Length: 421
Image (cartoon, rainbow, N blue to C red; front, side, top):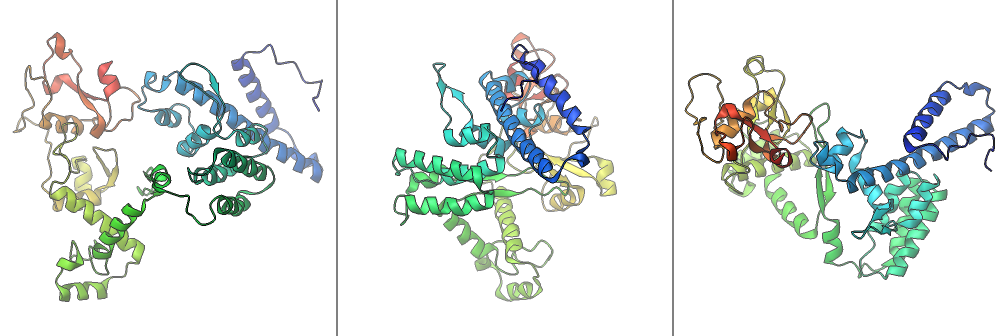
């Protein structure tokens, strides 16, 4: 029932309505809840949770409009996800992006309004009856429906899951979703390779306070088979143990049996730790033998790490790679001891050709030197977070077409968009 005592806000602009909402939230924050009865407190809390979900849905509408106007690049961000993180301050942008793709209203190329991918779930969230946690489970279940299932059955399943989301917990939804999937494809015969290819993904998470990153995804049967074959040989007890200098490296098939047996007896890692160390050893071996392209955007396809001399001497702090990963200085030193590192020394004594006159493109030496300069780990445009491995070299003083020189003092790293600007 609408409270007619509330002021009429129909004449207010969107900006004024948002300002009013902030004022109401400020007022709510000062309310004394101790005077509410138990039933009233439950009612207020339930209504607040519904309101939070409804506000999230409104935020999704605005992100879609933001994307439609291509504002991410206009404000100096490489993608809508980067803009959601840096400009809009969205938490969990990947989960949020998946949610709005499933429930938000988009426009077609001709300007027509298209219905949400999952309309019943969108309606449940718009009313506040289902929250983001419910949406995560429902979307996961619906995305696993085989492509061969008829469209009307998919829509029926979507309506069923959205109905469940209104009255059940996310944990209950997972159980109910498994039943829905079993009903649609009881024998698993409808699932084909197109379904597996649609769901394949590997995601590297952002580094936490301990510089650790999460790894998640869905692997196709072929990738699983290849990875398990590699781990069987490289993640055997005693193999590729970074804590044991005498541990054999590479595949156990190439290791000395006696040395491997001795290393295995000293190996206290569990299987998941051995898997981690094996994967790192495989990737390092691939870089060492030159697998992949000979260069990426003018940089060699190896680890390029930047650190200050004072941090190296003190053995504290962090280094940063050309891809933007932070490495503890102890790891930087350990990696340098096993490699042939590039060393940038800012003095008059260098053999790197840093002054190339009218050459069109920056040299590899210039790219590495620019990365080593203060701020060179990112695009030079203010606020842009594109790391050095994904930037171009910009003639910052004078454009090359207007006579600019390809000399180190006239160059700056810039992502593709900001280079063109």
